[in-house]
Image 1: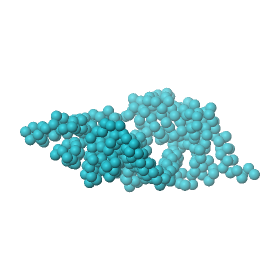
Image 2: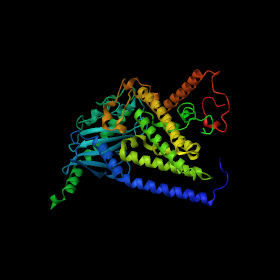
Image 3: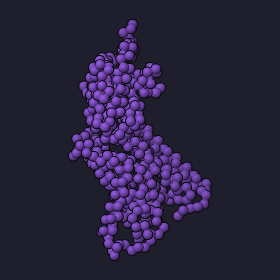
Image 4: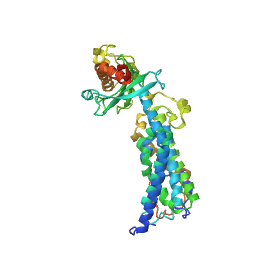
Length: 219
Length: 237
């Protein structure tokens, strides 16, 4: 049964043989599936971005472009160096910015949000990407658990006025959940910060995107 | 555990020597991914495929798989099957791969797969190995489904959520939500609840065993030679 002697050269060669054979087979399968996996990944990424766009803006007419975030604003969004946002374009015209935003003011660590804002500064949709808030209380920020997160749709920095961009407990207009104020407060404040970021950057952003998308327009 | 023992029957893997309920193997994927029936089904099917594939391969190569280096060889074969399965799941069911996350590649370290490869597949002809792998894999899949169904029903108040990860868009409206998410046993959606549930399932099995087989009719108490460590719960002798 159990062999206690040290492996001899023939056994090492057998192991090597099996390793090479398996390596060749796995490599072949990897090459055969690579194209499909990349396609699946791309389509998953597109679905990820489309979840904060208008349901009418879902076709192939909408393209996405990665866009850097100025580094002095990263802290405001809770992001780190190298994180990017996406710009959704229709026929070369920017229609929305899709901005990742992380709040560290939650009850159980980082709450990762994805915020879609159109170029008039109105929120299209906000989605919680990941969080570790208390199950049964704070997790109502997930769309799967409650439609609370839909309260942000069509809101902007002037609707409601900035001073009402808070949960009811803080004098704002957004509901908190029974037994959990910290979680919705973290989300509301982070969404407000994201809107503020976009308001500051919008003009420059729109100019840059248009000039980049239509280089011939400058000639 | 060994076909040459008169104790062995391939079908013991379904109940008497169940890999989880008796040997307590494969617990980490069991506890981690069974929050929904869909995840349980996904992981169970991939594990069954890997188990069958690696058992057949080990059986075919069994003349080479002896000596001091048989363990690394077995692990290589299992890891190859897991890698192939992962590539195929990522290519054809990418959202399922995302839902299962790290537990897909971690099937390599599922002791059920290694123990079957070592004790059965590497020593027996292909028919025995394939039957054993199918039975053990089905037993594991069945338990995953039971745990997944109980956890989803009472932990989330739903059944058949996310089935489109496996069956595609036709399964999107299979979701059955008998009660509101506010009336659920939250602990069941956490690993601690899964652990408690597993404990109750093992206790139920042992109870059924002692009830169905009163001590007078119980199998002769002969020690299971050389394989004590394969039984972790129930009668260990």
